[in-house]
Length: 316
Image (tube, rainbow, N blue to C red; front, side, top):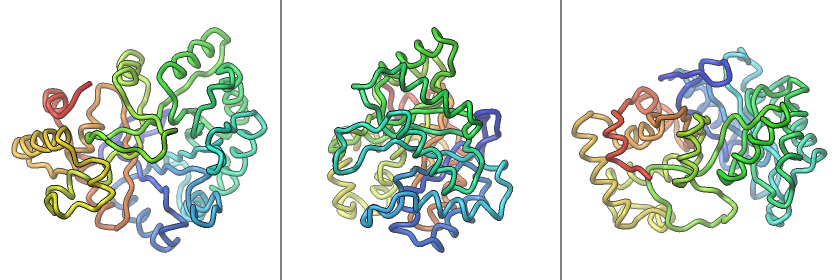
């Protein structure tokens, strides 16, 4: 597993996602995933207050599972990331970014994770009706408690991120440290949740110009390229086919196969190396459903491709 500095900590370049921890996956399964991730040198765990039992609408289950697992380990050896201020799923149009709402979620997350601090705390969504300066000041209030070392945003437009950092600089405040959009080598055709913000050319330009850290979710595109390689088009799951099976992604797939011939890397490792080898610090979040998938992240975490190969695969 390769590492790079993030917030002053030596951090694995591929993070372990935990959307279904404590929900779809039992605590025992989650512990197996985290044990396997630790065994390959992984130390970046990403979660969120809303993750876990979506059916039962019980927030915090993912955080609680991770918190109990971490109790038996050296907390400082792990880069711990969580998100809050997600709108009510039944009312996604109503933001939850008041200082009281953000602070309450933040404190509950620390309690669930059984820790005094997280390495980075993210706002899960934006609320464009709220002045960005108010949001920046709220994030700085969290930093002042010592409960987080860094702050980030997920599903924000590049314009709002720029605006937030301009406000922070003008007022002597801490700005946004990292961005978490949806991004993978495969282009997604259908999106069930319109509040998710995808990586685009303007966001890429923001990261290239500023060096802002990127932590993309959905980085494997539901394993589209790996499944296409292993199963063929007829074997793709319906949801994967609906989201990703299109002429543009098939062209990218052909390029992946050429890079595979040049490097000897697996298709899945190439898809993640496309992200970890961007010209700005990038830590893709990898979701898993089996221990074997966790173990496969060892190759992806070590994989390196050239700038030319990366841009051959895709560039904005």
